[in-house]
Structure formats: structure tokens, C-alpha cells
Amino acid sequence: MKVLMISSDIGVRGGAEVFVESLSYELTQLGHKVDLRIIPSAHGSRAKAILRHVEDIYNPSAVSEIRRRLRATHYDIVHVHNFHGLSTAIFAEIRRHAVSVVWTVHDYRILCYTGMFMREGKSCSRQHAVCRALYNLKKLYLSDKVAIVAPSEYLRDALSRYIKYDIQVIRNGTSHPAGVDGLENVSVSNQIRLGYIGRLTDEKGVEELASAVSSLDRDDVHLDVVGDGPSYQRLLLEYSSSSRVRMLGSLGGESKWRWFAELDALVVPSLWPENAPLVVYEAIGMKLPIIASKVGGIPEVVQNGVNGILVESNAWTEVLSCISKGDLLRLKSQMKEIEIRDMSIVASEYEQLYRSL
Image (cartoon, rainbow, N blue to C red; front, top):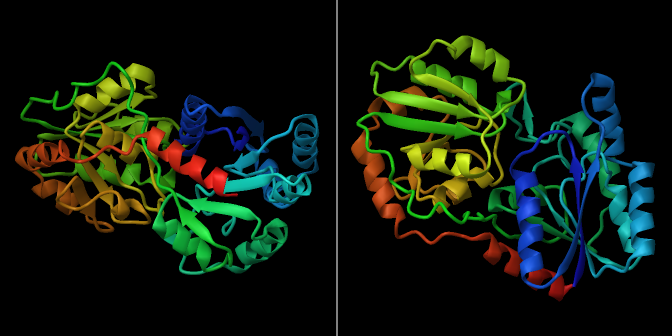
């Protein structure tokens, strides 16, 4: 099959972006021809942010680019990921060319103008007026001809309250890198070394986590923070002299995986209802326990007492005060028996979907 893989470039490299690249690679390994196109969208200033909300509905330049590509090349499938700034109008354009279209939804952008289904630091129980008005315009270009995929049951259920078409679940996976096998259980110190990796933004809960670690009435728990984003400078300034919280900046490639191997647990302190964080699958691939917020789709992957610890809202200090090295070692031992969901499996499931259309 010849697949056109489309996603928008919103200026931030996160789990969705890594997933798109990994899926494209695995599909080529299965013999498909994949044309991956990352299309820039408006971002940056407030004016551009407002423009992006308009472009979520109709972006003439994105529609024209899709039209040119579909006229120039015959594709069997167009697989859309983040449509932010590209507009839902691209779905109608794809259908005009009689090409099957798959849309993997990575967040709540179709329902919520922030993409997080949050307002004033709290999860929304319903759509607010502005989001509802924007959604009613976006959905004009959707139809049951679009095969919609959610990576978690939580996101599927949230979408299904508003989108009245079938939505199936295909879970994320991990591309376990060559050359790092055998790195598990590297940590031998009596200290407990926790690690966060990802975007440093308010909804990720990193500031609350760092505050909890620094205020513990014990000095054997340490936190590494890896990543970049709007909160980076604030965190760096606050914890530059801390002996418990280290700001490591960005890590990639083999350095990231070796850092994973030195941890006792990955922490995912999200405040927003995460869909299916790719980093959780990466940690499982490294047989690394996960301590995570009990929000969104996370409990579908992190099982309390099996491969990690789920933390209720505002309970980080309580949980970290009680956690022991022995607890984490037991979880690591149990995780040796847990099957890794490799990206090759994910690609096979998408291949099956493509063939069914």
C-alpha cells in the first residue's frame, strides 16, 4: 500500500510526534510505501494562536497542499494525526479524491480549543460554550467515511460523547532501541532516583512534583527532570541549587535510554487527563516502574502494584513519603514477566485497519 502520513508541526516535539515517526518506519518494514509529511501550522504569538483556532476549521493553504499531493500521486490511504492548524477541512478534501482516510486522535483538540479538556487547572466535565461553538464548525467536515482511532478507551469514550461515529482503540507501543538490552536494573544505590521526561508545561504537573520531592522529610528521594518548555527557566531558577531536584535539559538517542536505565521509577505527574503517554510505554519497554497520576487513559496501562503506582490528585507528597527502594525493586522484578507492546505490533494493527477500508 502507498500511505500518505500527515501531521502538523506545532513547534513542540512530544509523544505524538515520536509515535508518527515510529509508525511510519514500522509500516515501511512491513513493505508499505509511506510518504510522511509534517506540515507547519501557526504558533507562537497570541495573534497566531487565535489564527490557529480559525485554521483548525478551514486552512486554505493546507487544503490546497493536500489537493496537490493527491492529484500528483495515487495513495491507498491517507493517515492523519494532529490536524492542528491544518483544519478538519482536509478530511473533506481527501474524500473528494476517493481515498480512504484514517485519523488517529492524540488529544482533545477537536473538542477543546486548548486540546487538553482543562480550564483553570481543572479537567472539564463538559464542553464550554466557546469549545462547543468551535467544535460545531470543525465537525462539518467529518463523516462516517473517516476511520477514527483513539489510543485509549478513555479518549474513545470522551470523543464518543460528541462524535457520533464509530471510534476504535489501537493502543500505542514502544520502539525498544537496539544496543540497550540488558541495561535494566542498573540502579544499585540506596537512594531512590525518580525521573520525569517530557514537555515542561503547567498541565504536566512537574512543578507540583518537584515541590513535593523538595519538601519531603527524607533525603533519599531525588528527581531528575528532562525536557524543555515554558516552565523550564522557572524550574531551573528555583532548583538550581537543590540537592534533590536536577534539571538536565533535553536528552535524546542512546543518552535518553541510558538515563532511563539509571532510574528506579519514571514519574508521570500529569494534571490533565492524558490520553496514552508514549513515555509510559517506553518505560515498560525498559522494565521500569511508573509512578503516575490516576488520570485519563494512564490507568489502562499503569496497573497499581503490578507495573507501577497510581497517585490520586494532590497525593504526591503522601505517596513519595512512604515509597521504599524495596517497593520499586519488587515492581521491577514483576515487570520482567510483562509483555512489551512493540511498535511492530501497532503497525500490524494499523495495517489490518487499512486493509479493511
